[in-house]
Amino acid sequence: MNILIAILGVLIVFGLTFAASSDRRRIRYRPLLVMIVLQVLLAFVLLYTGAGNFLIEGFASVFDTLLSYAAEGVNFVFGGIANEGQAPFFLTVLLPIVFISALIGILQYTRILPFIIKYIGLVLSKVNGMGKLESYNAVASAILGQSEVFISVKKQIGALPKHRLYTLCASAMSTVSMSIVGSYMQMIDPKYVVAALVLNLFGGFIIASILNPYSVSKEEDILEVQEEKDEKQSFFEMLGEYIMDGFKVAIVVAAMLIGFVALIALINGIFSGIFGISFQELLGYVFAPFAFVMGVPWNEAVDAGSIMAIKMVSNEFVAMLELGNHTGLSARTIGIVSVFLVSFANFSSIGIIAGAVKGLNEKQGNVVARFGLKLLFGATMVSILSATIAGLFI
Image 1: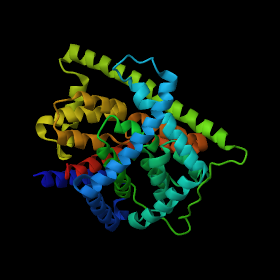
Image 2 (image 1 turned 180 degrees about the vertical axis):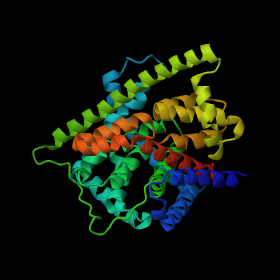
Image 3 (image 1 turned 45 degrees about the vertical axis):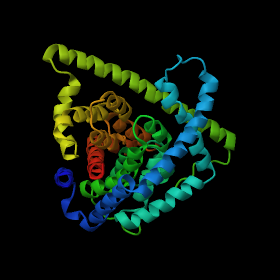
Image 4 (image 1 turned 90 degrees about the horizontal axis):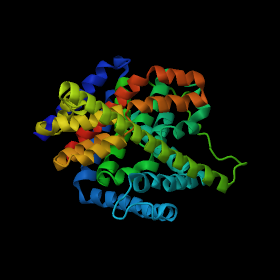
């Protein structure tokens, strides 16, 4: 039964994406088939085999170790502030982002990350049938983040046609930044975080290939990565910059959580008082069919749908907190919804990505803003596809 529902889910995702495609005649089906098979195989290995569990446990243990080091810095500055026996969300989940950001800066400065990202991207371009730039950008987005990734290709941003610019932005919205992966792992099971990272990478190519199909000529398929390192900037200047960037991310996420959680509580109160049903419950009914085709049992689909909707209208952190409050959900539902939540597919990301591109090229930033809703649609389809594939093995 789960297999039939998964097939139905994949067909619905493909049908909706095909209906919104900008040029159906140019869709290339062979790379799509290859990537779907790869998604299924990777989900099987990561979620259903001993080797996959070993890899995920190793990955999670690395982040556990890094977060323990981060805790040393947090405790040094904030030790004694927290109430005994309590773990404030900002201190334990968000502030470690500062340390992870510093590590990313070091790897970027020493040219280790650019080397890894570039050549993984080149290998992926052979599989997905897309350009080298698009493949590089997808990998880079998963490590550098949805804003920072555009800096590394800023030389090419101004010359990109609309269809290629869309694919770059779609990759940035479909993935998550490595600097906050550790924070996710403290809120949901690490194996679902890792599975989502891998599945979203290929899912982004699949959805973009249907929604925005095109071919890149050899003359156009040139990858020129802008190096961030500046001779005028010393190692410690770079380190200070990345540490401050990480702190800014933590503060921004905290501010958005305060605002969105409070607003959702207000809206829930208004809806409950007027209509006798909360705003979350109403959204849950809207998203329940999508939760069902992802593999969520129908009796839990409304609750799952409300969490999915919260992720879209606010962000993944708010939704993960809400998921933790639903203690009555089955392990299968928690796993499927967890995979869905690991992406930047929400309304606020439209502004973040458009702003990042506009900061490099104002004209292209305006182009991105115009296809913002299409970006959100595509990224949401990626999340549904990844969760559906993962549901086969949960």
